[in-house]
Length: 427
Image (cartoon, rainbow, N blue to C red; front, top):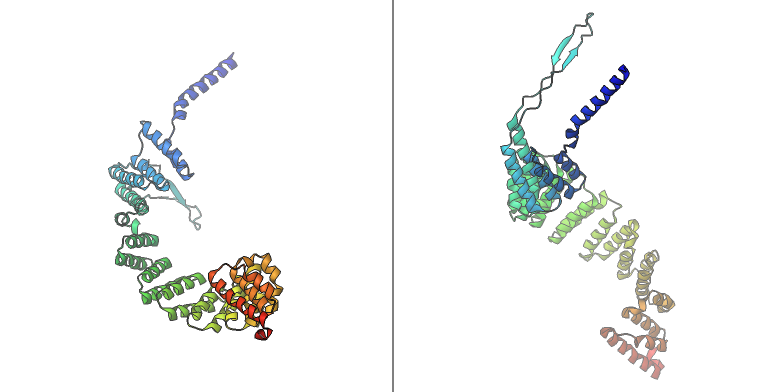
């Protein structure tokens, strides 16, 4: 009997306990769920949870509620709603009552003397910093202003974004990236001087940050202040070893600004630092070609093609134009693009006067569809004319539709008639 009573008591205790816990189990913290949904990237679900938190009539932290909505709208690119939410979050934070955390029983750390035979016990209480609600309020508001500046920037309200960064106080000046954001806002608002000043102020606070100098370099370049741009670029390259592409960008900027000599100097330096960068050789070659230095250009193009065979065509073409046809043909032989290779080979054979070889690759011209190009068909017709195969020459000349080439073909056809009438005309 006693055993039954004990068993029944245990069952009744379990039921009472479950009933006592049931309301607690039904309490759902929608704010916490919304936070989880946000970090999982489920923004619509997060908004739904926030709405349920608002509708639950339970006490919620409105600063966190509005701040979370602002972040979600920012992610969803709904910038006006994001701005509105962050403003409400700031007001809610200003009105918030901060309560100190629940005091825990002070923990004692016991220190023992290694030289004491009795190991006397000394107690030292770990001291916590004093609770400062205004400090917490200030830090939270500054953080929201950082988010607000991002929303303003995305909404293209650039000066408002700057004001938000200023309102963020210490947090608005805590990272170099915030000064690049400030500068970009001023730049897009057409306040160029303020943009460069923002970068200069950032550089004083973060002297080791290279990105501030890099951005200043691009701004000076757009303002066509090339000497200042070069100085900024060199300072940037000292702090952070530049890659080949950054040298190329600097050279292109200088070239577009009419500073061709400076552009060449930059690329010559890049050639020494990055001897396997094909782009450096090719761009440098183009700049020398603009200065009527075709032989230097051809050599640079060939060196570039050693590191990227896609430049073989340009290298071979440059040698062909320089009259170095044997070397042009050698480079052409290494090309893998059959169509471009055949097309270029025709031009080289014409330069060498080897018309029989052009006729010899007729099948290749036809196979790659190159005879659909009137220039290629005219070259083949001309080759037939030069070897005195007049019937074949005329057959191809008749198919030419280009007006300018048709006029040239008319002259050749007249010459063919003369040759047929009097073979001595074509000796």
